[in-house]
Image (tube, rainbow, N blue to C red):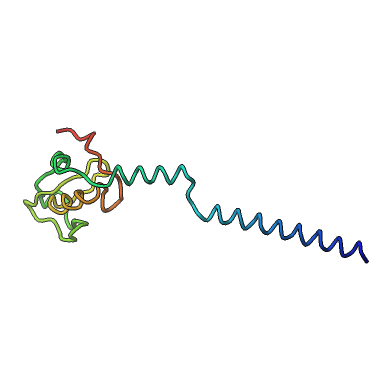
Length: 126
């Protein structure tokens, strides 16, 4: 009888230890970020926080022509492009917006509003 009680207590302690290990693993996995990935995302946010007006002026732009693309809208203001509208092309992702719309956006955050790609003016040719 004593051996049965001791065996039950040992099995119960092993089971509790196993459950604690599983719980710890789930909590660590659920946090989703290691210290390294948290540091990388902080660096990305700092790097893409905003753009200066000089950097924005260096981004390529063009006058919209209707025969180039039909039915295209600016993702910032949701209005369609009209012939003669000044449009700006983001260099990395190649998305197009009204120049005024995207300029206002980039002053606040230096990422494309469509795909969230960082806007980099280093590779832009003048």
